[in-house]
Length: 463
Image (cartoon, rainbow, N blue to C red; front, side, top):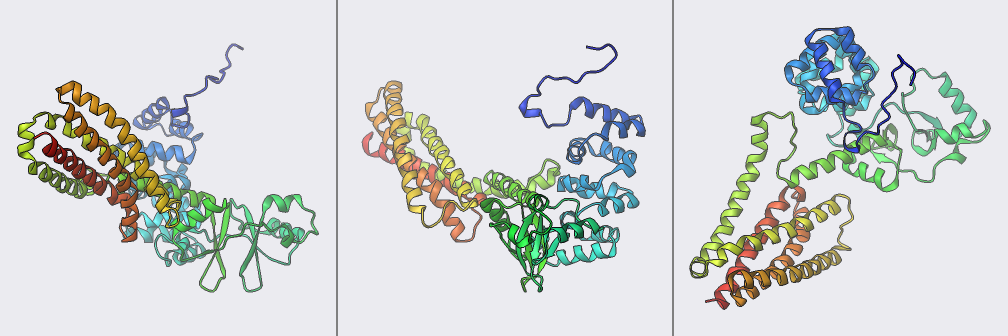
């Protein structure tokens, strides 16, 4: 190693923290903030990606965040706003100097501005809109006129289009002479004289073809047109299903009004996955930046529902109070039956909710899926029935107790498989979000059935 020259650390970072912001760097940045050393702060943050800066702002406390933004000032990039968690985006917007905010917003594509406005209070909308050029403001206001959660809100108005009769040379000359091309785009959209999109041509095919080649001969085979009022979940599904990079968006008359790119579609998919995970746990749209009151308000209703279902399970137990009093071993073994059923039901439930979200579980294969889950429950139940039958006999010296818990285990795991796959489908049919409500119902079914089967069989065979 040459003296006096720093060499990069070639040690491979651990996979789990390869893309996390370095804690030592965070400490250095906070030290620069505390010392109000703006030059040092800019030097440390300049190499960071906007997403990393957003992560940094989300991880530090409110006081340090305010001080950092004040010092960072005009270096603040508009992309940081689009990467921020919506929980603190409003706070950051209010901390920014109006001139800095205006410049940051002007750097964003129209779809990012719309996304920003959706997460802000209406009282803050005018501040953002006033920062835009007149043409950009009109584009954003037109996008906001579409329903929330629709393709019209998701699309960007900046789109590169060309008449379908143009050649490669004509579109290249057009792009070279244009002053307002999007910063990033993947396709040139071919349109007819009425501005109806008729095809997509990738930039790669344009750049590799001769100038005289007609664009229409280079159009991609896979071409999907997205109605502006289509739900964004359906848009994300189309991108995932047909491996799209971008797709044109049309109004009610079929005219081209914008384009949706894969990055926006994948954000929707990611949000849907995150939402499903949070709802399966009964916490709704929760964030680490939420206050105690907000978090409590989100979680309390479903905890109340769980309490009600737990009382229902307890009522079932109370029916067999005398049986438990006569055979105390039942009280020891009861939680095992309920717990195994709950876990088996959660396994089936998770698979079913995910399959519904990806539209893999439909009416055509529902019967087969339900049969599979019942058979899986039967096989698993039989395996653990043998185990618990032996445990019950050896532990308490009652052969019949072993047979009772074995039979109850089989019954509950079969019901758990059926409930875990069937309840989400039933809830979706009646218009209830299966990710949000299924867990409570499945747990109730497995608890009630598990207790009833175990204690009922015990009443018949042990007394």
